[in-house]
Structure formats: structure tokens, C-alpha cells
Image (tube, rainbow, N blue to C red; front, side, top):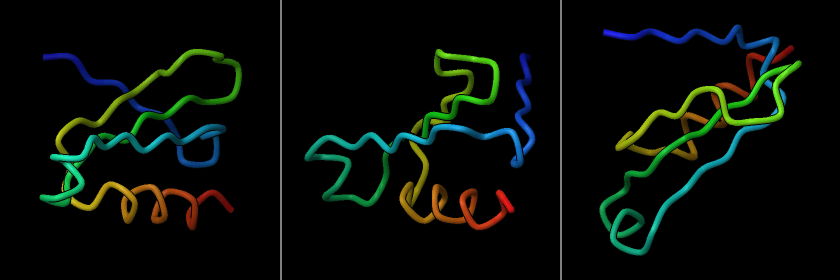
Amino acid sequence: RNTNEVRHIDVRNLQVNQDVFQRMFGFGSVAISSAGQSDIELTMVRVENPYKIADIIRQHQG
């Protein structure tokens, strides 16, 4: 088991990815990169309501 953690205040880029099928059924992936990293550091896949998840992260960025 691997665990990656990014503090919400360190999030610099959020990407929500959904193909047509995923959009129809309300799921997708949320990719996160943080300060000091140019590449995607963490990707949550097959999450329900990915835009809502991204909005929640943005609200807690401070």
C-alpha cells in the first residue's frame, strides 16, 4: 500500500478529467500538483462528483 499526502495549503494545480462515459455517470479523476512540483503528484481516480471534490479542496486552500 502506498500513500501520498498533499497539504491543502500547498495545492497549486487541480485538474478534473472526465470522458463522455464518466460524465454521463457522474465520476472522473482529480489530479493535484503542489508547490515545488511541476508534475502531477496525486491522482484520485474513479471519484464520484469530481468537480465537487475539486471545489472543496479550493475552498480549503485559504
